[in-house]
Length: 114
Image (cartoon, rainbow, N blue to C red):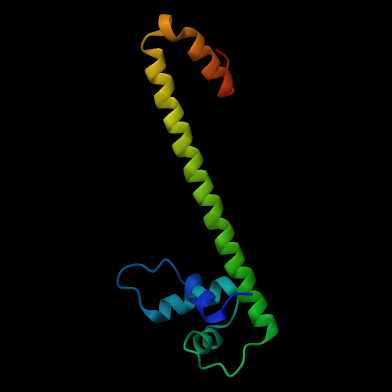
């Protein structure tokens, strides 16, 4: 289980420069599908208690956000890997006679016909 107030603040991220707290609370409320006024009380620690259904909504929203971040991170790493492989292929292709077997193996490993 996560710390609810910390999760609520993370749901508001990223905050643009000059962002108001009200806007951050609105983003968190929208992501968790909790009314603004209720989210404001949770944000400031004024809620006497957090209902189980509210905690579940916040947890699910936080989990979704973390999952999207992980997917985005993986996709960025994959694109970096592909770019690096393209650079290697380009270097190997500079002297195709000498590296022809390597280039063919490289292309085969990348899933492309040589």
